[in-house]
Image (tube, rainbow over all chains, first blue to last red):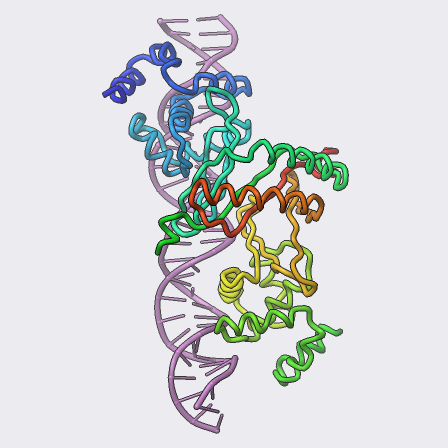
Length: 173
Length: 173
DNA sequence: TTTGTTATTGGAAACCATTTTCAATAGGAA
DNA sequence: TTCCTATTGAAAATGGTTTCCAATAACAAA
């Protein structure tokens, strides 16, 4: 119901949608998009909305399907383009979990960065976010980054850590 | 010259090639392949040979091209199939550095495991192997693996760490 | 509010790494 | 050497992503 209500507003009056922005989870993203000189289109807003409402690791098509529910005019191409742009400005992270399609998630939630890494089940592809050991990791990574930057003349901007294994269900098969 | 010599032998007499196996760097791989019940074909041997002779991070096509020099009969399909098999039996690691093609490297050299991670330049795609901080990493990862295994009921088998940044050349542009 | 410029869009087609299909071939046990 | 069947190469199919292009919508300026 609420979803339909929002949809209606989108088509009737864009400024009404803007007034509602604090009911959505990604109001703080908009300034970022505009700050980089990009136009804040309905499609881009809808993609950000979907990303801000989930903990899942959505593929471009997943996002397309979800956006399509509230904004059927969107095309898959635009979803790809939007995601590409969001990754470029650092608002979205792009992951590869080895199943042949990229996965995306918002770089930070409304409460700020939510630093976590992923446990990937090589049996069923399930992804678990974990936030444990992050402190130790951050400490180690910081140290490693400094050392590696110097030794290999790299300006390190980013890192990736993933664990692979079998989830409980897959182990019992 | 040496390369041509070996090639000639390949076509003339297979057992001669076998006698020469200790001149190649991957003799210890063969038993592994056969141990898993796979036939040791000329193509598979040639792929292992290419992998054992390089520190580079080759794509399937890179490998195809190099194998093709000494064993022109090979097809790209077989390279893909061989790599897939080698990854499955754990003899080869498969990496994704974000450029849309998979990269492969031998899981261990003649001197045993050569545990290292990668520094990826997001500017030019250059990959640097690093072996620094591995001890600390291993310690941390072991601890994390134990904790995560228990907390999330995952049997962790593997991990991936990569750093991204700009190499010296790309920073000066 | 209206207008004008141009970034952005959707759909179709192109792209391209990888996989599948299938008949021919080659590995290797007997 | 023979035989069985795993393996092969070539061509076609697949599927996620990108490109092309004319139509559209964002939004700055009037």
